[in-house]
Amino acid sequence: MSPTKAKPGGVKRLPRPFHLPWGEGMVTEEVSVPREHWEPTVQLLEYADGSKTLRFCYYHQGRFGRGPLIADAQDLRDLLRAAKGEAPGIYRMLKSLGKG
Image (tube, rainbow, N blue to C red):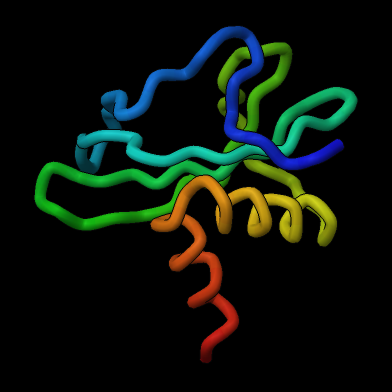
């Protein structure tokens, strides 16, 4: 399947708030790659203090999964490709992973 913005189970509005024990802020970008049984996803989290992180997660049947993301090389390539066209902040951060 081709990469797409995360939309299964209805449109996911951006930005939208997130709350974690160590901080809160907004999900400002999100890309996913639909698969047969689940949807690997990357989100750009922008915290209230201005810092940014990536969350690697997944959706299953349109619902946010609470477990870890398990992704193969093709999933990661497809997420990078989706980010390049749809989510420049995610794309920049993913591209920086290859620079040591």
